[in-house]
Image (cartoon, rainbow, N blue to C red):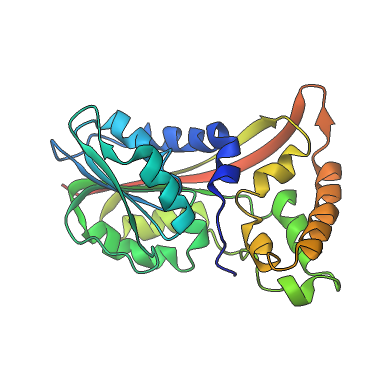
Length: 270
């Protein structure tokens, strides 16, 4: 899989839809052990959902971690600084594949990021070890790698025209585990785990809105791989757009994008 270059403006074009699962995840996080909680957001992106943590825990010291300079620049400008409740929101560069808590955390949270991290479940022991007793590890990931959105992208990338440029570039089909696997891995670490799935039916508007959606996320590795050849990039987008139009037909009120996500909240024994 190619490490993608991220475009904060493109990502934020669907900010409302993308933030809703994070709000649903936070609604299931119980009270944290510290009066002034220490919180890490792994894969914070442009920081717009990280800021929601300060709304829920106004006294918290929160750090959003990401490896994208573009996303971090946006987060620094838009969200960094003291919070209204006396806490603080900061952002820092980190590689989630190797990030380990350097101090005790009350909450480690991740929103739509771990699907980009091969072997992420192997990081759970280090992350839960870095939680205070009674602390929580919580994450949500897209769980729709088999949906037309991704299947059509993979099929097109594997055609003779594109396989030399895009073979092995896209996210693997095993990038997200089954709910039962997450439940087992987290419970064996001494946590009380709550794992569930939700399918959102997003009503998108505008011209080719499903293509516009995926240009901010799942399509980024292909766009990165073709960035040095704008003509080829545009040709690939044209072919993929036509496939998406047939798979996700428009209606008078918009285009419906069914999108399944997987959630996990694991509370460490107190």
